[in-house]
Length: 127
Image 1 (cartoon, rainbow, N blue to C red):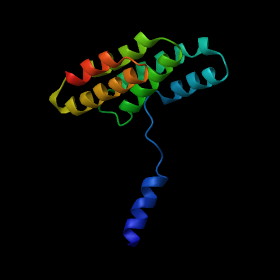
Image 2: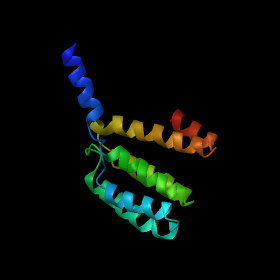
Image 3: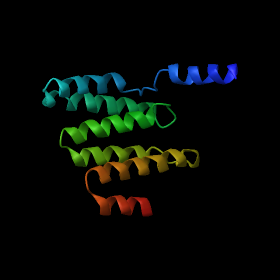
Image 4: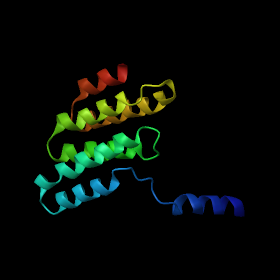
């Protein structure tokens, strides 16, 4: 029982996994919250470049993809938000990365559903 408590406490006390681009995404989020949305695209792109450089083996890769896509969607750049997922999937070209690629497909489908793009989401889920 005590071991279970220690394990549970360790899981909840652990810090969330951050991506290689987290500091840039944080800057972009601060710009968005401050009303300076024009200043958010630059840090978001820099963050995405850092996430791509770290690659799908990085523990924070999926978080970085989600953060970059979210910021571009908030900026009204939906095509760029979708392109983030396409670029991320292209990085998962080895058999060992197929699980990550599948998770990216589900994440993209969720993004499209939130944007009421049901037909596109269905196409992705059926592929």
